[in-house]
Amino acid sequence: VRVYKGLGDPSTGCSYQSSTSLRVYGLDWAVTVAGARVTVLSWTPPESPALTDMYAETRAEGAVHFSAVGNNNSTLIGYPAWLPTVFGVGGIQLDGNRWVSSPTEGSNYGPNLDIVAPASEILVTDRVGVAGLDPGDYWTYSGTSFATPMAAGVAGLVLALRPELDAEDVEHIVVMSATDIGVSGWDAQFGNGLVNAGRALAMAPAYVFWDGLEPGSSIRWSRTWP
Image 1: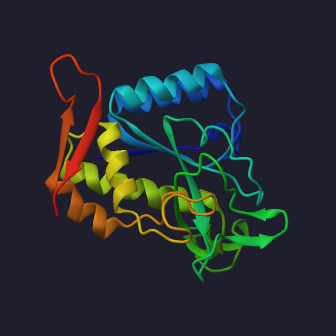
Image 2: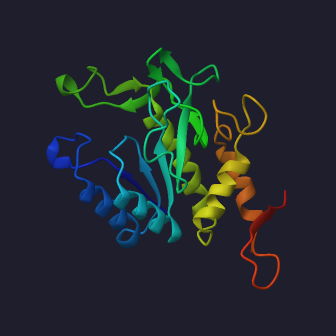
C-alpha cells in the first residue's frame, strides 16, 4: 500500500511552499499514477476549491486522506483537515491529555476533529552535523504534523490486509477501533479517540459492508463481527 506525504516543492529548499496547481497535481498524481491509497498533509495551505474537489475525487477513487489540524491551541481546525473528505488529526501528549505546550501552541480541537495520535516529544531523524538541529542523528519534535502520519499508518495497515475496501470502509474501521478517551464518544478534545493499530488490524479481517437495505436503496451501513 503506497502512502503519499505532500511536502511542497523540493526546489524551494524543502520549504512547505508550492503553488495551488502543484498541490492539486501532486494529489492527483499520487492517487491516479502512483497508486497511493493513503495521503498525508502535515501543513495548512490556503483554501482552494480545486484542491477541495481533488480531495473529493481521489477519495471516491479509494484514497483515504489525513491532514494535521494545526498547532495553534485553538478551535480553528486548519484546511484541509476540516473537509468531510479528509481525516482531521489532532495530538495528545505523554500524559494522555491534548497536547498543549503554551497558550498559543498546542493541538487544535473542536468541530471537525476526527482522531488523535501522539504529538509530543516525538523522536525523529536529524541532519548530521551543523546542518541539523542537534550534533547527533536524532531530535525530538512536537506537533500534529507528527500525529498525522501515525494515524495514516493505521489506515495503511488496514489496507494491507484488506485492499479491496473503499475509503469509507477504512475510515469506519479507524474510527470504530480507536480507543475512546476523554468524554464518552466523540468529543472536541480527542475527536473519536486515540488511533489503535492493534484493534484496527483485529477488526479488519471480519469487516463486512453492505450497500443499501433493499433494491434501489441508497442507504449505506456496515456491521462487524468480533
